[in-house]
Structure formats: structure tokens, C-alpha cells
Amino acid sequence: MKDNEEPPSWEDVAREHARFLYTVAYRLTGDHDDAQDLVQEVLLRVRRGLATYQPGSMEGWLSRITTNAFLDEMRRRRRRPADALPADPERVLPRHPPADEALAAETLPADVQTALLGLPDDFRAAVVLCDVAGLSYQEIGEALDIPVGTVRSRIHRGRALLREALA
Amino acid sequence: MTMRRPGDHLDDELSGLLDGELSADETVAARTHLAGCAFCMAELAAIDRTRTLVRSLPAVDPPTSLLARAAAAPTDLDARPPARRAAVLASIVAAAAVLVVLLQWAPADRSVSPSLAGLVQAHATSVVNTDPADVAADQPPGVEAHVHIKGATGEAEFDVVPVVSRVPVAAKYTVTTAPGQPVADRPTIDVEVREQGVLAERIALDAETGVVLRRELYDVSGGVVRMALVERVRMTHTPAPTPAHRTAGGLVAAPSKLDGDYLRVGVYRRGRVVHMLFSDGLHALSVFAQAGALAASDLPGGGRLVRLGSKTGYHYDWPGGDVLLWESGGVVYTAVGDAPVEDVKAAAASMPQRSRLSIGERVRRRCRALAEAVTGG
Ligand SMILES: [Zn+2]
Image (cartoon, rainbow over all chains, first blue to last red; front, side, top):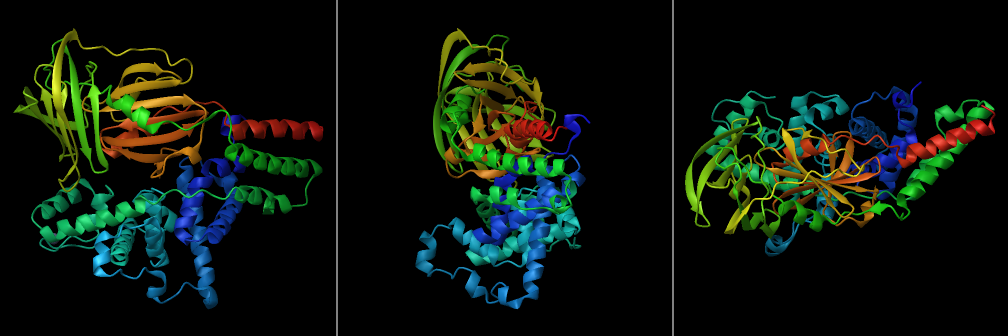
């Protein structure tokens, strides 16, 4: 077998894509411990899945694995209500600043992250895959197994909710 | 996708438009509606601000312990009853992974953190003149110009000595020309640039030399994204400089062409940096190459992750356009462009990648050879 026909080794994948993966994971979970667990899970899936990797977009493939691991984890948490995200939006969304402060206030990355966490999981996944991972609608549709029209709708609803939360 | 009656306001088409994900027909319909609807225009601006906030979120560095932990974790594969040889190989590969992680994060002599301001300066001051109306003489007189750029992210000023290029306007653009208003007391030709039928730019060219004297770039809703204006022009009465074609010293092969009809104009050596200058007839694109590994932790703040083909890089703004940064095969590349950002990304992604072995690949091969020696393979 020639070297250039080998699938990439998992440590190459880890080294080259750790920052990409971790950023997507952190934006999805909003928590360093959760992001580490998620990346750990993704790397395990990558190690098991490298044999099935087809040459193409490594980021697309990784994003699909990351999102699936994330959505699996969210489903698992929903079955355990104690771990569920707070249902009360006031607990996760930033409170609106008083009107006179609002004009001067700059939107900080932490505020955007908090607002992202306030989105329903499906909307958050679509927005993060589009605006953080930089995937096309087509790629997001394949990652989430939904039609492209639904991708557009979820991204737009997600952004509209973010806009309200950050207003 | 929902059916929409004419007269209804736009909905998720707004996000589709901002993401460049509408069909040509949908784009025309959305833009037609926007032109006559202040409500949707305000919605578009608000969604655009929100989208920009998410896209501006900084990249997040993983803790150094993370990959080592992942390397040590067993997989289903490793858990199989192992042949001795496979077990030794697995443990050595895991150790190699830790080594690779250390190599990546430890400060190394060959780590490179490009001086973005310096490279932007090198790009901006070698800006190429352009010739869509075939106005320039074969050997146009030299020009010194003082350019003032106002962009969404700030302003910048440069003294420029444009070099001559005869690069044809890329087929992706439709240009129409007409006599223009004088700029800096020079007669101009007004050039309207459309991409896929949409007004993308308006450019005022010096009628005698073809030098760009004013450039306005528009966003999808027709707003001015940035403007570059030549405030002073001085004719130097010496022929304009022609670009150099130095060899890149074996560091990289400078391609003759990049995606989007960018043709190579010149190759310069600036110390340890190779500067490859390209043009699509209307915009300049500089690709700088430096040997080394990208020291991502030393990069200035404000960079966003960006996908460039199969690579991940960083995206920064400069007042006159975009800066993209990525590493491939032991070479750090920095692209500086003044075209619409998607065009700059496509051209950067088409840079041929050097086929040198990565650190990880070299470590892996060495470990495999070691493992085979250990196990008598
Ligand atoms: Zn409307």
C-alpha cells in the first residue's frame, strides 16, 4: 500500500484539528469541562471511524461527528432531568441592561455565548455549524440529516432568537 | 422552503442572502423586495449584526492535557485481545501522539507568527494598476499615490508606487465603463463591476495610467463596505516599475494561477518571506510564504477560524480587505486581498499544498519503524 493512500492517522487528525474541534465543541456546550468531554468522545469516535473516512472535507466529517456526539449527549441529558439545561430562559439568557446602559454596552463574546446556550439544541447546532464551523447549508443538512430548506429556517430562527436575547 | 406571495415580507431568505445560499432567482427576488421595503432592509441589517457577532467569536484553545488524555484512552480496537506486536505498536503510537502534542505546544525555534501589519503594508504598497478599458500605454508613466482607505473595521493610509500589470479582467466580472468625475485632479474612467448580475464595486481609473484612484465595495444590500481613495497623485516621469519574478528559493512553487482567474503578476523575496503577487484584473492578492510552524498562540486577537479547502486557518480584517493565515506542510501562508472575501478565500484555498511530511507524519513513521524493529517485524 502506498503511503498517500493510507487514511490519516488519528494523532495527525488530533493535532491538526484540535483547535477547530475544541472551538466548535466549546461553542456548542459553553463549558470547558463539557467541551473536553465532547472532544474526548469525538476523538474516540474518530479513532474508531478513521477506517471509514473517505478523502474529502476533514472539517465536514469532524463537524458531523462532533454534532452527532453533542446531540447524543443532549438526548442523554434530556432523559436525566436533573442534568437538563435550565428551562427558565432568565437563567441562561443575559438580562436586558437598563435602557441608558444599553446604548453604551458593547456586546461581549461571553454574552453571545450565553445567548447561544439559550437556543434550542437544534437551532444552536445549525447556527454553530454555519457561523463557527463555517459549513455550507448542504454540509449542515448532511450532518444533521435534514433538508437544506430546514437548515435555512433553523439558522434564521436561531439568529432571530439571538438577536432578541442580545437586544 | 415556504411559498411566499409577492408582497409578503422576507423571512429566512434574509439569512440565505447573507450566507450566499440563495439561488440566482431567489437572490434577484430578495434584492428587488429589499430595494422597496424599509422594514426588510432593517431586518437584514439586524440579522447581519447578529450573524457577525457569532462569526466574530474567538477561537478557543484546547487545554494541553486534552490530547494526551485522549491518546491514553483505550478504544474498541485496542481492547481486542492483542497480538503482542499490535500492543507494542499501539503503545508507541500513543506515546508518539503525546510527543506530537508536546511538539505542537512547546515553543520551537522554527515557529512563525507572521507580522500581519508588515505583510498588509507590503501588500498595500505594491497594489497593481488595472486596465479593463485598455487605457494604459504599453509603458505608462510612473505614478506615486497617497491612498486613504476607509473600511468597516478602521482606516489606513499608504504611499503607493503601483506596478504595471496587463492581467485581463476575470470572466466572473461584468464591467461597464463610462467617462468619470476627476479624482485628485486627474481625469478618470468610471468602471461598474457586477458579479452574477449584482453590483459589487465601482472603480475610478486614472484615464492615462490605469491606476485605481477610487474604489467602492458594496455589500448585498448595496451599502458601502469600504472605500479606497487616492488623495494625492504625483507623476514621476520614469516608467512605472515592472514586477520582479524571482525564484521562491525552493520554499514554495509560486503557481501561475489561482482560483477566480487570479494570475501571477510577480514574485518577490522580502528577507525570509516570499511574496507572490496575483491579480484578477481588478484586485490584487498577495500570498506570503514563510518556512516554519504557525505559532497560533502568538497571533493577535480578533482572528476567527476559517475553512480554506481542507485546511483550517485564521481570518483577520484590515481596513482595505481581508487577511487569511494558515499552515501547510511546514510553511506558514498569509494571504492579503482586497476583493470580496469569498473570492479571496477561494483563491487562498487553491494555493497548491506542499507535499512535505508533517511533524506528525514523521514522528509516526519513525515510531512505526521502531515498533517493527522491537517486534522483529
Ligand atoms: Zn418586506
